[in-house]
Amino acid sequence: MKKFQTAYLPIGVPTFHLESAQKEFEKSALLLRSVCGNVAVPDEMLLSLDKLNAFMDGIDPDLIVLQNITFANAAYAMEVLRRFRDVPILLWTLREPVIDGGRLRLNSLTGAYSAANAIKQMRKEPFEYIFGSPDEEKVERKIRATVRAAELKLKLRSLKLAQVGHTPQGFGFGRAMDLDMLEKFGVRLESIEARELIEKAKSYTDEEIEKYLRDAESRTVGLADTPEKNRLDFARLYRAYAEYVKTNGIGALASRCWPDFFVSYGTPVCAVLAMLNDLGIASSGETDAWGALSMYVGQQLSGQPCFFGDPVSLDEEENTISFWHCGTAACSLARKDTGAVIGEHCNRHIGPTLEFGCKAAPAVTIFRIGRDADGQFRFFIASGEALDKPKQFLGTSLVVKTADSAEKIIHNTVEDGWEPHYAVIYADAADELEILAHMLDIKAQRF
Image (cartoon, rainbow, N blue to C red; front, top):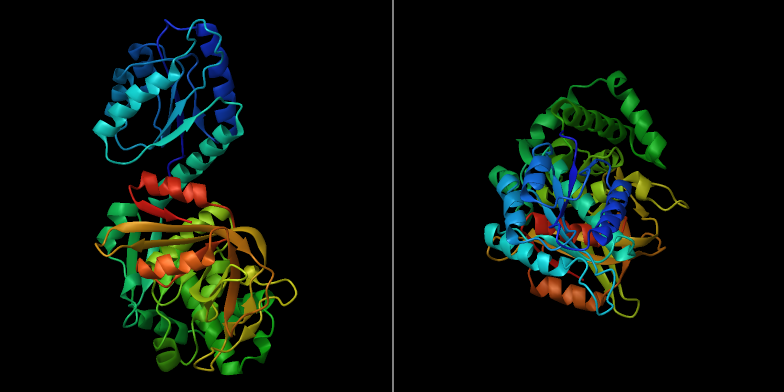
């Protein structure tokens, strides 16, 4: 994958107070170097179109920080857009360093209006904007979130997501088309029938699955209590999925689960998906491809697996929403006092599945890539904290105390026709998600 690059373009003209501008230039460059892993910074302020173009000759950016170091007319922004039409832009206005009734030192804000007008005329995607000096906390926070969102946008272009089997009847909201996935997110979608992996699993001997069985035992509690046939068939399925993922370079996966794995195989796939989530392969059940993509996005922003589940309970007094699913959560999300307990499926009474309450966290983000009634993509984003709660129902569960009104969130999402599956990200990622939505020209609903 291409190495991500941020480009700093401090544009302006030499007729303003260059001593003040130079100080802001040096502070801005220092901030960007501390925030960005790979940032292209010019040796001097770009105070002419010739200097701007000469610097742009040597860069290949994935994010442009366009800063009015002083006033610059729209021609500067037009040159940037001519070169880099599809690259996300963070437009940065500097605060006037001194207001003393004397000379206007920078006039950065007027320059921002000129640049913004040109950007809006030339492209449809929203751009990011921040007003403030390089030493302000809100400026650093905005730049950091924008860089992370742009990095993720680039990573999506190298993601291959697998759809294993078809969505069950009535679960069409999770079904993805390869063209939609590629056109909007840059993600390649691969499809395989569930029976292919089932047949592959059946072909392994007991000796060939020993490593996978031992690995699962090291991650879980009580796997040995599962009937031997189901335990061994789970390990066979674990190897089939793990090898398919590795051989085909799969980064996220949405798998069919019921009824096939109960009826045709005799052992659920739930615990296999839990193992994949633990290994860093974002994996959803019920062939929810958009749910798997939501999990992948959250995993990249948090550095750990996401919980995948349905909103199943509202407590207005506690201001909480409980999320649940039938046993696919990553083992590493389990509460420390119980560990990743193994049980059996709540409806089919066949194991192994996972049975635990998830660990607490001071900040989580509820996230969903969904579609509205017109088929347009949209992001659902809600902030909160994961409470220290035991398992709520058979399966795996997580209780989130939301920052906004939990009752309002439930009413609004039901009335707006949102899907019933959500990723819960173990991090405060709301800013990054909202910025990513802008970069992809997707509307976001944030609570």
